[in-house]
Length: 160
Ligand SMILES: [Zn+2]
Ligand SMILES: [Zn+2]
Image 1 (cartoon, rainbow, N blue to C red):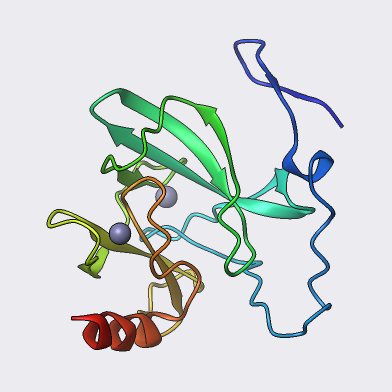
Image 2 (image 1 turned 90 degrees about the vertical axis):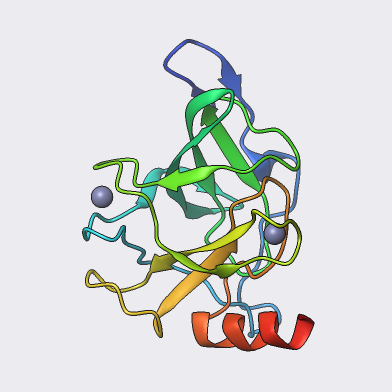
């Protein structure tokens, strides 16, 4: 499948470069099939797959402007499709709902950078920090992605 962005650029789906992730292969990978913004919008994007599964669509804003990206729903998989805007390695992004533009809430600071924040994406329509995933808002920081927030707090404390 070929995907064109609104401005006509061609995106190469990641699954064409890599073997489709077999989720049941090791049986322990956590896959998100429901995720919500703080106001309860569903951010699962059935139109954009990342490694064979619907991705999670997020809006972002940084010093280069606004954009949208779709991140992988698979634990430990940091592949993403940038739909618009620009992401720069090491840059901080404000991460927002692509539908209502409500910023995602901060859980804790990430230890990769003094300004880095772990933002939280709820797995229930009403945000519950114990049923959520968290990831760092610095581009290319791999801390904390797709682990339950309770474990994230423990992880960050252990690292401190
Ligand atoms: Zn929303
Ligand atoms: Zn970080």
